[in-house]
Length: 268
Image 1: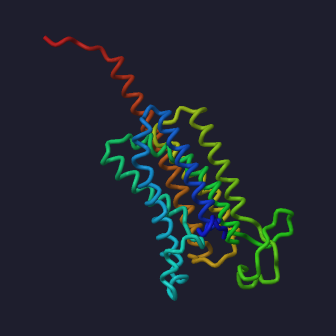
Image 2 (image 1 turned 60 degrees about the vertical axis):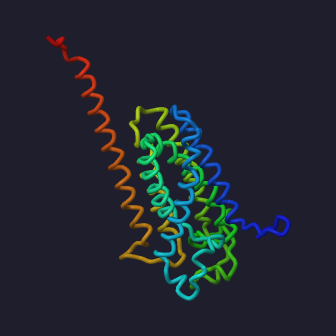
Image 3 (image 1 turned 120 degrees about the vertical axis):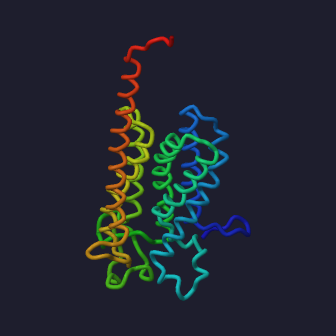
């Protein structure tokens, strides 16, 4: 924790705030580049961010309820960590859907503007986990191994001092996802919504790997952690959505070409 005069500043919250601010700025610029006024995005970004944070916390509380049974006030202590990307995407997605409908905004352009920005925000915000000594994997002696205090080591790993920095791996991967998404939309002729669908498919592919490298306590279903199963489901959903949008987009273009080529007769 740091202090700005008498005000306490939590490093986790600061990293998260920087990630959110950068993501909001990038998303706004992408929205404007698509021909929309900046005021439209500015009017909804606060609601989307708040909904994302609430969703992120709710998912964590529900999926790890045992951490809060003895002290329910810990539910609001988000500066101690515990914000799930799944809940953030769900909460923010609901806000985007509702606001786009109520304000008659282009939902396809909106989600495509936001998705790469979210990946970039994740790359920055994940560094908050470094300050809280969380999100790490199996023990390692590699030079970039993360040193974890004994109090934060999972049971059975007390004798190890350095661990794989999963937060760093995910941060770098999220940055790669951002670059790939920007490259894809410049290289290929994508239809509205495909950038967002590709984000879901790409991010969850990496997240599945990272989840299986973590050693912190988590709920499991069969051989996999709960979030690993969710990653598989989201991966399949994202790429199915991507393919569906591509096929539907080509069908619409083909129908448009047929209409243009069809001979027209003047009314008599």
